[in-house]
Length: 99
Image (cartoon, rainbow, N blue to C red; front, side, top):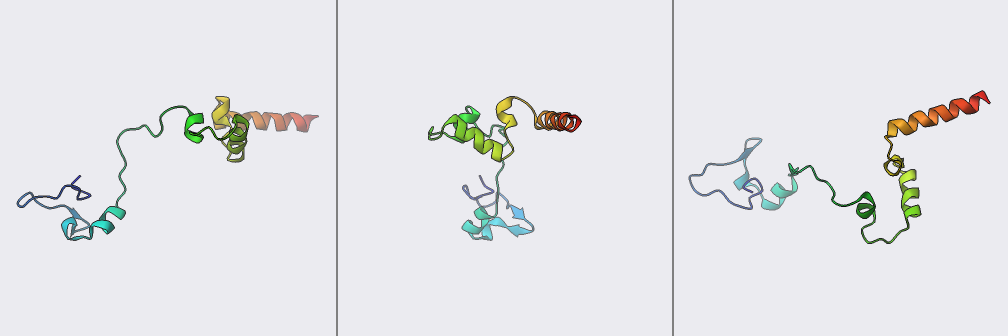
C-alpha cells in the first residue's frame, strides 16, 4: 500500500525509490497511473466460462459459440486443446485430398 501511497511513510521510516526517484515527491495521479499491480491470487474469473462471457444472460448459447468460433476459441467449448483441433483439421484435409 505504500507503493501507491495509499499509506504514506512516516518520518524516519525510510523512502521508496523507483528508478532513483523518491515516490513521495511524485504527483500522486501520475504515480498510480504508471503502476500496474498483478495480484498473487491466480484466479482470473470465478464461475463458469458461460457466466463470465455473458454474465447478464443477454445472448443465446448459439450466439456465444459463434463468437468464440470467430475468435478461434471454439475448442474451449469442445473440451479439446487447440492443438487437438488443429490435428483433427489436418486429418480431415488429408482425407479430402485422398478422395
